[in-house]
Every structure is written in C-alpha cells, then in structure tokens.
Image (cartoon, rainbow, N blue to C red):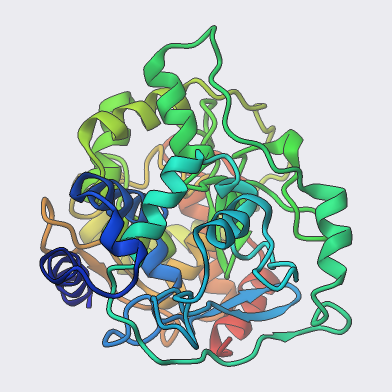
Length: 411
C-alpha cells in the first residue's frame, strides 16, 4: 500500500507540472514550491489519516476513534464538490491556522490545527499548492458518529475559546537554529504532541505535561522528554535519527500507529531535519516518575516461566534481544511506560515493524491472544517490566481483559 500511494502521489506531481492542470492555483506556482509542499505534506503525515482505500489516496474516509465517538477524515483532493478544490488559499490557511472551515463552522481537533497553527503562511500555501496537483477524487466520507451534543460543530467554539489560540511559531533566540528547526517541525507539521501529550477530559492537551506520553486508539504513545526510565535519556541523537529514518534502532522498532508515521512521514525527511528534531526532543525536560506499586513475586515467577517458553527464543533470556531485529526488552522505554497498554497490546495482537527504504524487510511478532489467558498476559507483561533492571508498575488481569475487549471491537 505504501509503495502504491507513493507512486500515485509522485506521478500526480509530475503530471500536474507537465500539463499545468487541476486548478488555477496549480498553474501559478513553481516547481520548488510544489516540492516544498510535498515535503511538508509528508512531514505532516497527511496521507495516513486522509486515506482509507489505497486506490483513493487523500480522499479521506479513514475512521479516527476518539473518546467522544468516531470522526472520519475528509477528502483533501482537489475535487470541487467533495474535496477542497473549491477552497481558496485563504480558506485553506484559515482551516490550518484557525480550525475554521470555509462556511465558518469549526473543525474538530482530531484534525491537528492546534499544531498546524504554528506553521508559516508560506509553508501552508506550499502544502495547498501540492495538494492541488493530486488526482481529484469524487468521494464523500461517511458522516461523523459523535456523542450528542458534540455532533453540533457550534460547540467547538467553546472548545477553541478554552483551549486554542492561533499563533505562528516564534523562534527562541536563546536556542540554536537547529533547535528551532526541530521545534518548528515537532510543534507544527509533525504535531507530535497530538499523540504524545496527555489530554484532559475535553480532549485538549494538558500543557503542563507536554510530550509526557498519552493513550491513543488503544496504544500508548511513549514519553518523549529526556528523563529516565520512561523518556529518551538513554537514546542518543543518532539513535533518534535512525529510528525516525528507518523505523528501528538498537533500542526499539516502530509498530502500530508509529510505524505509519515512520513509513509515510519521518522516513521521507532529510537527515538534517531529523537531526534537528532529535536535538529538540533531547532538550525537553520531564519529571521522573516514581514507581510505587510492586509486582507480586508469584506473578513474576509465573511470568518468567511464560517468557522462557514463548518469548526468550527471540528476545533472549537476558532480555537483550537482537538489536534492529527483535527489540531488546532490557532497558526498553516502551516496556517501562507508566501505562502498559502498548506492551499488553503487542502481546495480545502481535506487531510488525515499519517498512522503509533503509529497512525494507519488517520484523514481526506473533499474537498470543489465542494462547494466553488474561492473568498469563498480565504475568509476562509484569515480568518484562520488572526484570533486567527494568522497573514499572505491575499489570493486572483486569487491565488485560479490558484491552482485549476493546481490541475485539471495530471503530
């Protein structure tokens, strides 16, 4: 699917340049602006959320589960009726900068305008210019399925008043140009905090917990601040760059939603921009989280037996795994997150790492939901979270049962 979408997008770009069609706007832009726009669309991972069917790239319709119901991404191809072909450049900029549609109604923050607002006017218009070169697709996504009264967009005015203020990114003069470039990408097009920052009961970012990890779509996006053991302190700059470029490093492999981010977005960024992102992330601070709950020794012994039987062949008895193939569990920041959702999900459903040009062959882990009962999954999860120097709260059978039920349901 990824290679097909890349081919379609690239072909669309060159066809538009050759023929000069699709819209008046596409005829008045330079090749450099279109390249810049495509790069920023990639940086924003737009294709991942706005594609549901591989033969309809950017046509929307992907279901995005939220605590308040399901939102379906919209068609952002230049189709005049069902896409954004009839939008002016000002309409497009207002949507990204203010979260407002051409008719004046409010967008839902599942579309990350609270981050896109930081992007410069020129960058936003470059994205618009590139999107104008895409194949127009006549497709209307399903209507959103939200809890009452949130299905009325007028209520988003109150949300914006409480939690959102349009603002373009301002450089920090006390930091380097590279740090500022990284901040611009992370806090703008990359919208990393949309997944990695905890949310309040209204779905808005808890600003005092920026990048400290958050649950999203039955995954837990890990903490990205520079502390230990849950943050990135043990990862060097080059480790972060390698992970974002290839989907793997000696510490971990990208799976689930993050695999999509790597495949469709970060793997396409320049090494310079990835280095800038790493510099910025390494400079973010976070509180060290104390582990108060201690796993029961009997649970740990049961977990060790399960690990030895079902996991050690790949991850090794020592928990050191095979770097860049089977991730080490020893010192693994994902394993030790305060929320065990991701590690439990991987045990239940298995996992597959991202496929990139640098790492075209994915590594996979089989699912164990058919083999292990809830208490057994909890035991092995607790064992790997508290062995080889790891330290994290134990996992309960109830936690496993709840997640198993959620994963059995479709959005």
